[in-house]
Length: 94
Length: 94
DNA sequence: TTGTTATATCATAATATTATGATATATGGA
DNA sequence: TCCATATATCATAATATTATGATATAACAA
Image 1 (cartoon, rainbow over the protein chains, first blue to last red):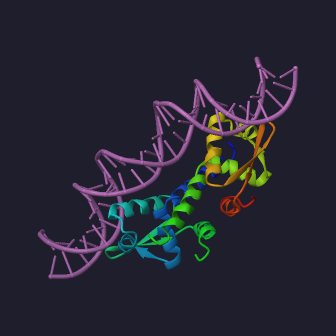
Image 2 (image 1 turned 30 degrees about the vertical axis):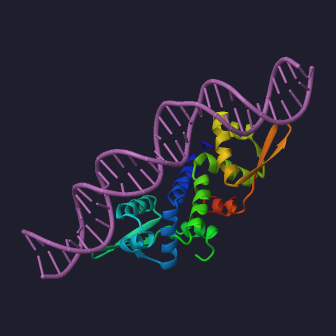
Image 3 (image 1 turned 180 degrees about the horizontal axis):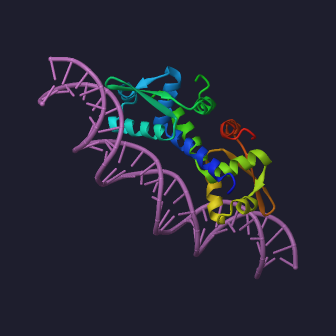
């Protein structure tokens, strides 16, 4: 295990970031729609703004999503193509 | 989100069960070797017996692995074929 | 500059996960 | 039956995750 320890840790970090129903919903939405701003996600999820923002922070921190600012809004998109492969295991339509 | 809430939760539960380096190592080993008993895993991982056993419990609880007793030993195998698809995203050789 | 909107970060309480020694259970042999 | 071995479960301390109100920041318009 020592040898591949780093690889196992990196994979676990990505799985951990995806292993929450709210974050899965966000990620699946981004795969389906291509991009989304925070306010729209917040509306869909019906959660406090800080809750959504902190979930997005986790997705950003491990490189799952990336952002692009457009005036006041920030748009999120999927940044790692492994994500699609993972989500497809559960949701074929993605 | 309400509509697919159950689906998101189920997927998150499986991802959560895999989202730990020790459990990933166990699961990858099982995919590669087909089956393994607890004592051998314990040796490979160099962890206390109860630690290994509790990780195995998590994998059992969400249906990722199944067991078959052979005398004193218990052999584990992968029981859900989505697991292979997920692990392959990180480890091509599986 | 002041106000407004969208988003991010901070602080923190509640909850879940992790690790591990101690104990329990199951199997088979003497 | 008694003992040894393999595995599972319990108890619990340490750590991490989650949720959310409060506060901060960034962009833009008046």
